[in-house]
Length: 249
Image 1 (tube, rainbow, N blue to C red):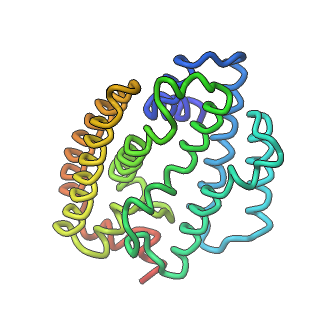
Image 2 (cartoon, helix red, strand yellow):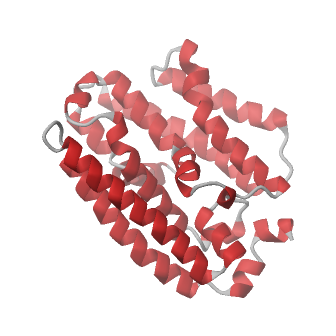
């Protein structure tokens, strides 16, 4: 799991943030961030593996998450504030059990909350490294985080057949079919691309947004290609037999 998390930190450019910052005790903070991500993954695994959820079990996972947040330097007074987006995404996952699909809302809304764990890591790093704002601000990462979250869903379409997971791309395929679901994701990628270009035009003289712009553009291209590749591989029988869809049928 630690190897997976280190790969995630590299992929989401969290490692770059650490390198670019003047944080004291980088190794210690990295260790605490990895442990925090492990605790969040354990909560995810519980939600993905169990249709019936016990509040007492959720409380145990949250106790560990809050303990790790404190170790990362989050003040006790801010635990609720810093946890609220993960709590929100948890509520989305729980609503799957009553048939409320992520596709009922906009993909931007859904993916914003699905990127909650990465945004929490960024927030903690920025709290410790005020100097980073002179290079790129927290809002500068919005569209990069959205497209990489879409990429994760598209990449995990086969893996998520075996879990109870709010995979927007997979659920859209189940609900609307191959052609329409691809169109939905394509339109969202177009939207991210337009927003990325607009932000670059506004920010290029005031920050290092060019780096984020290029990385976002790269991930849009990769995600488009993977979207077609995996949808072409995915069979109707596999979708029909997916764990989540069997529960909902």
